[in-house]
Length: 358
Image (cartoon, rainbow, N blue to C red; front, top):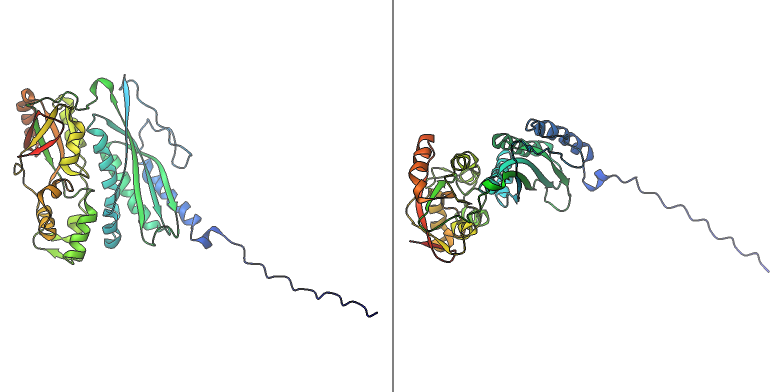
């Protein structure tokens, strides 16, 4: 009987090269360098209440209980939205950080809160250290201007999730107010005066429609000068969301307001009712303030109805403060002395928590 043949030896399969996180598009070394720069920028916003350094698992902040004897913490979270698309195209990244901080500051300041600290979330595809630094510089500058600390955040590299060159940006803020100084709108009554403070443009809202009208319908390029705006298209859209903290402090220090509304997405129509008592409506006098050219141009480009404009854009009013009628003269004198521009845009009346345009 013939011998059985021995099985042929198989060549070993070649081993793949050792995989690294960088192969998947995550640059750990670059991320570490970016964090070092972020640490420096954030530390410039610190005060004695900050007890931690950037890089820990949690930011530590000591509440000043001598200053706030019955403290109520007020918080808010938000994002920049599709305004970022214009930032990507123009290569302008330092202002979006300011947009985010100021938006969040306004949201808590209208309830009487003093901003304490801010955290950000920045997610991108492939890390661009220069872009990250510009964004965080804007965050830090706005935090310093508003007197709050940038105590932490997250920079996430997510290749394959975001297109190269793009990122998303969101933030979270915490402030404090003594309970007896909390402003909720509960004391608003019929006859109170509504005063509006000018916006600096679209702020951070309505950009999906604005981008469509400017860049698709009108066919503008970001660097194209638009006669109707007396500005370039991109520059007009990228104007920084204004912080109203200085004027809010003036109003609250003298107890001149019983309610304030930050006019963001939804316009006056959707935001003002959020502070009205159930038995109160707001009468808004259209034409009582000048509407900036950018809104009129958007209206023309899209043939947009007045109702749609009022519930999409701020139309030039970024903050509304409700002033009791018997304090209005003193409030007006104070604002005039301070050089604060404002418009009397309506009054509170009996109703069912709606905005009525007259």
